[in-house]
Amino acid sequence: MTDATHPSVAETRAARRVTLRHIADSAFLIIVIYLVMAVVYVAVQPSALSAYSIESLFNNSLPLMLAAAGATFVILQGGFDLSVAGTISLVNVVIATTPMEGPGGALALLALAVALGMAVGAINGIIVAYLRIQAIAATLATMIICQGIALLILKAPGGMVSDFMVYELTASLTDRVPYALVIAALGVVFWTIYSRTDAGRNLLAVGQDRKAAALSGINVQRTEFFSFVWAGAFYALAAYMLAAQTSTGNPSAGEPFLLLTFAAVALGGTAFGGGRGGVTASLFGAATLMLMQKVLFAMGVSSFYTGVIQGMIMITAVLFSAAVHHAASNRRGA
Image 1: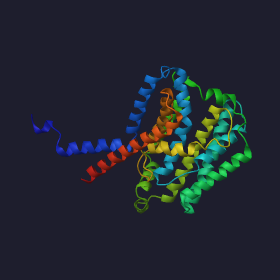
Image 2: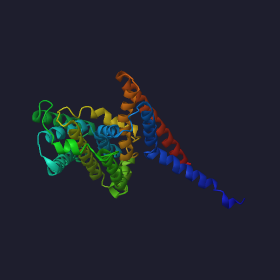
Image 3: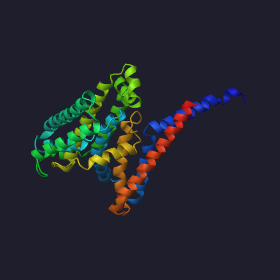
Image 4: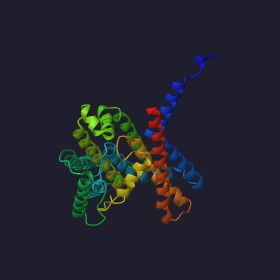
């Protein structure tokens, strides 16, 4: 057996570094956790694989998945966005109080929702990126304003969502492929393409080292601004799908998303300091949180313990991801 048939020590170390980096910086870990949770769910819930259960699972998960995807854009560049709750509430009541029937009406409402979400994101971006106001303070103010406007539009849960949105957008493409799953898959495709563009690479570069990114010619302010705009667009999509699922509007619709959104991002392994992670991982993080709730309910676990168990699993996942990333960084340094 010659030496040529064996990988060199350098090649072996390089392969290990690539593997560690893949585990730390991609959605690998959260996908594994999701698959494990899915196996447990099938084991404890006999009807888990029925068409209705699959459709219900993805429909319930999609709004949080979209909200977490939006927050990820801001977090990747080292920022923070609390306006998710206000944006979802505002867009939700606008949809419920602007009834438009049929596919054309649903498309018009989608355009209106995304435009409104991007407008809120643009306001955040201008205040944070160009006026240099602290992100937490700025987006907290935006959240409060949006929730106030939502209450002015609709003082209590109500309004009306078109039958097309309620029955078609929450249905399935085939017996076991819900539209919600298709939309989530499109989100993965979008991030896969976006992360390979200059804008996507700039987003990560700014999050890793803002000063170094600026010195390398990256327009840091523009990158920061558009991260908030993308976030607003995804929050609007979350509100749009939430309206379709609930068939009504609620000025408090966004409140449950405030903590769950960041929990999903953390569970996906995206670093809150910026520069590491991705939208795909956050999508799976949100899906895992929702699946976890269904597993615990199917196992008869009291709702009092649901948050505790979710928190423990989230901390374990984040610590493991951080440990693997640290090991990968040490090996790259070596």
